[in-house]
Length: 434
Length: 143
Image (cartoon, rainbow over all chains, first blue to last red):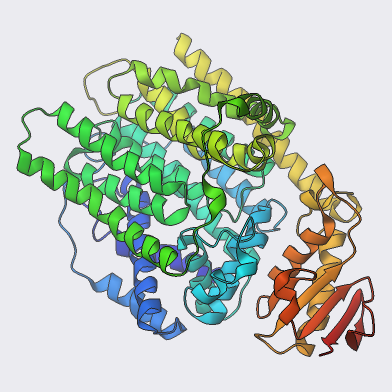
């Protein structure tokens, strides 16, 4: 039953989200954005239930899902991968599927589960499932502060885990690892859609998809990423990538909005990323189409800015109300920490289990060379700079800080950077069926 | 052609990495009970974690849900290896989510009504034993 719930819930969320993220002829390409939209709507509904004091029971959760599934369908314009720009199935898809299958089988053993699943994501989920709510009383306990369970983190992932456990009737960590498999599959589907929408030549697109799948799976296996939330940041970037590159048509605004909201609800570093996504998309959109009226630009801002605001504002208010904000999140900028940060980064990037993959972020300048991928480059570079700033400004020992999370932060940017590099180097050619 | 060649080379590189990591993960899982690891590297299925899980499962029926419980274990590693007492406490909190588990010796442990001690007995003057389990003891804190 646990496994059934862990498979059925993402499917239901995708089906719900697909009602609002529509318009494309290529259902596979829009599925990741639909999954994000469904997950986000479900999470916001869970937060409302918590606020109203209505416990998360199997029946209330099913009622919420039913409601999401019967809400009026939104008629929206095309999203990436639509129309003629679809990529026929090929050997790259088979390789990607094999990577997802291999990762899933190993993840189900819990052997590649991130320790953070046991230290905070999973523990929070257990507490939420027992409390049948976002357990703010538990989060605000004084012994949970400091480097403990990150009580100030957004709660999308533990809420999804808790809901899965409640629907299943028991907390089954192995079944919850299926969520990571879902994030990986959605990530690859989103990047596949980006490659297709960019019109990347077929062999290169298949090879890029296979390479991204292999790189992501290798990274996740070697760095123990199952059960964590770093997938979700990487996935949000993948979903936003086509819109940022101007490949998503009129559906781009909502696509960026959903991606921004999802990333903001996933991890604390997703909050600045959400702001970056919205800001860069707005500027790129205005620059790309100089004839857009102020009214149209206002619509862009609303469609891309409202979803993250809906995710961030309630979380920020609850965090402040319950005193969950952690002092260790920021401090004074200290340039003298650079040596220790660089030493930590070299250790992380040179780790045998990562096979040099973090160095692939050195491809980022390539993305700046193409006008098309420049907005994506801006988001990835600014987020990387934000991570660097956090190392310079945190009161935590810089070397230890980089060692503890540098590889995971690099992972968040890697898949979009790899595919972005392929799109950036794609020669311009007229659209044709491939 | 050069671009295809580069993408192909990257594919070879990451394909090798994926196969290598898959092999390492499967082999590591097969040898999980024979693999020495410091507390920072503990994973589900390793003996230090499994022993703790068994101890927690034995203690669960003896402790009322929602009670504050202090968790104690002897520290034998520190520095780059990690503080094993701290990580045992973190794993134990995951295994016993229905309790408010706090670290023995912390400020919050002063209000604990029960104590769990893993492989190290606590002084009888302050702690009244309730049960001796495989791996440790369950106590009621004397007031």
